[in-house]
Image (cartoon, rainbow, N blue to C red):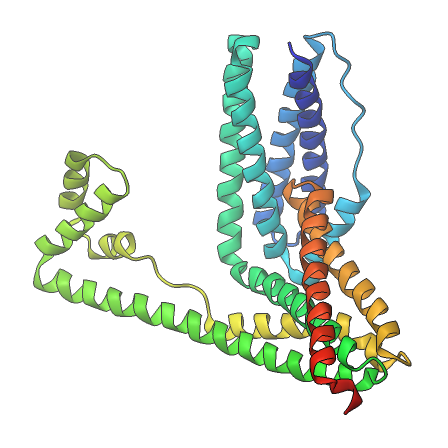
Length: 365
């Protein structure tokens, strides 16, 4: 077998072993009996997956690497579980399951000829297990309103990047007045938080109202003409890739079940606009704190700017690291992506501020 396949198998073994340890820790921390039992079951399955990759290596006279617990990952999971609830952990672990499914599927396609029939069949079972895990996490996301965790991450990231850009540009204009820069950053931050919160509220509310309106229309249509409702359902199933004869048969069978038809035609909107607005606005303000704080402590704007970049960059790096560790994405790649884009925007803002100062001589006013 190729060296690349062996390298991947070693990585898969370590990942599965680490996931088993993580699920066991989550089971220990979880108070809900149902979720705790599910985490224990997942831990057992991951150990079985790890044993598969271990035997896979041993059959090829390869010594499996020594597994170990990544303490940073455990710390990150515990921190998120404590402050953001089990939903945040479920959301990030689901991304990790997605990543595993894709990696295993590519491995199965690329190295199928170098595997025995038993190994191919076992790997297919492993992939099915990972798909089942993903389904479990999606269900947990719905239970814990994980869409709001995403609002929190998005809002904080926007607050960090946008206000860092604002205070960086203002630092070039007012190098000797850090308090003015800090106050201006806070004003922009509060305005941005309100704008983000109101925008999220209006967007989520509008989406829900549109869905409710269509649901009401569907209910009326069902009462007036069940045949027309069945026709709409048939068209939607065909659009989703279902064969026409099968779609027609299903639509006819569901014609007498209005609840099932309504759910298929339009799922209920579950996101709460008030909760989404609060998450987005407050997390945006949290992001504002990091780049603005140094301007109230430093003697000049350029000194404050250095610490502002350090604080904001560190916050971006921590968020990126947690996401990467829990989702299976490369830590270096994700940290580089988030920090580079954030600091790149700040650098461009500084150049723009310098240009405005040179053109209008604002700092002399």
